Length: 137
Image (cartoon, rainbow, N blue to C red; front, side, top):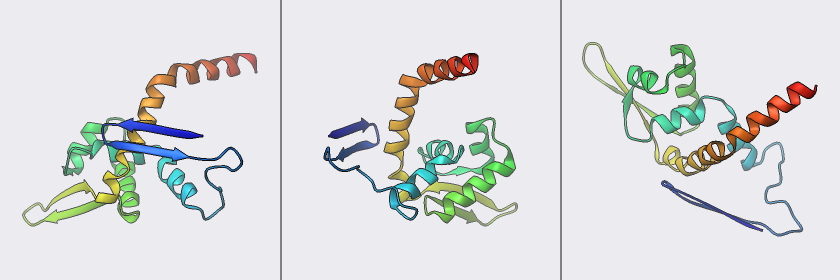
């Protein structure tokens, strides 16, 4: 089986055989690490919001909407810890701080975009399934 996802930020190709799963989902496997990174509600949103270049905290908060200052700060720290975001402080009064994607963070743009495309194409189906489940339960 082969799956190719193309987006503005690159192409992802998965190739598997019919006899084995594409990823062994062990507790310490890399696939689970990646899913954990995208499993947090705000990680992918912040990565996507940083795709156009360095941004200050307040502007980033305005771009995203619906995220509290505390949650944005926690998310930026988590992304920095994982090597996806770089924090740069510049002198001055008050000091200027900007956040930008690292090369590793930019490499995540294609999968985030692919997931966004999937959500756009299938979001109505998911919401309908949720409504049906709730109604039938």
